[in-house]
Image 1 (cartoon, one colour):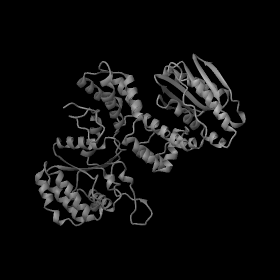
Image 2 (cartoon, rainbow, N blue to C red):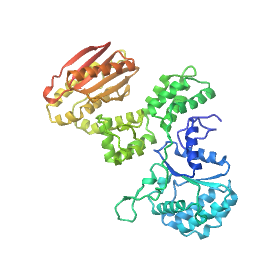
Image 3 (cartoon, rainbow, N blue to C red):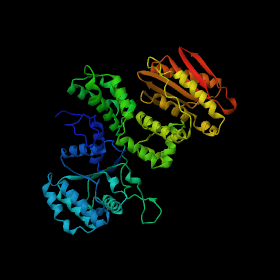
Image 4 (cartoon, rainbow, N blue to C red):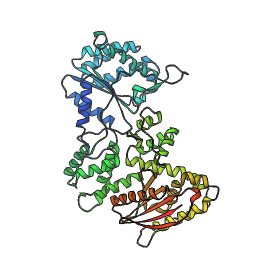
Length: 522
């Protein structure tokens, strides 16, 4: 059977092209062998389930270890109604997991079915199971988030904690290692001890070790997957260069890497002459992905919509270019990191380039939608030259005219605060269906924001910034020239927002270094 790039469920090495997981697996195996209890808490579609599968396979092949892999997703709510119900469900899952690998132990557990009454009974059964086994038992549980809001699950963790603390006493013998997987970190689970009490951080899982294995994939781990694909499919690809570019777009987020590769392999290369994966194919795949609606992007946006503080923080960082120092203890920042929106740095940054574009487009469209609907003006939609090139100079002049007309009216406070949004909303209907705009943040004392545009096969760069005087302006031109160099462009565009008392409404064609810049002041 031919392999494919997989973006749903478990990745199986004999069915799917996979990135190199050897270093990650070695790090996790080391923790297991040292008897650690820990949780792999990462965002959705980050490879947690695949990791547990690979870990189970590795432990099965390791002499002296017996893995028991369970999954708490989809458990009926009746099993969370009492400690006894949860204990019966847990023993039942273990019994089924061992039925084909260790039938003797499976039958042993089945014999206790009628005696399970509470967590104390379950504790005794675990002790008996450990004594019956010749191997060290490793418990692996996926999707623990499904149970984390129920008291029996918290009591279950508390029982395991008690046994762990006295694990060398025969009467408290317990699992050698426990590996949980979910989005949330159970160590800092926020729960209520009793109904109607104030929520507190009261996790019974504070015995767990910190999980420091890096779960994103670096270019060196991405490249082997590309080489395997190229060899199997007879495709020419510069694996090292493509892996670097994939990492640039995704920061190694497993789902995004596999998704882009899948688009190239299944949607782009089949209709292309010659079997060669060029860098342009990768960029085309990214453009297609940005237009797509999938469960990963839906989850990303849902997490913002369900958390107003997180939404507002993301808006300030992405749209307004606000610099926020990274503090892992600040609740909103911590939540954003938990959901894979932020990544640690000296300041809060969006996890990857693709997420930044998705959220940038979503936040700007939503924020300005109501404003646009309230306007009676018809925004221009066509500035295309005969050769299908975008007349961006005419676009900027028309935008300047629009701002001048509106600035003296009732919308002045909104324009002062959200002038970047106004331009982006102005631009959307012009490039709609013909191109895309990409946010390229360039943080400096001028609070610059670069917008890279594609229109048909043409590319443009527009820089948006506030006016901070001639000195800062010259520095900004230097930075814009450098950015144009990196984009391989000879010309660029500049929109400068002046303070309300200094409006000049001028335009200027600037020759700076070897670049030509058309600038308008608004």
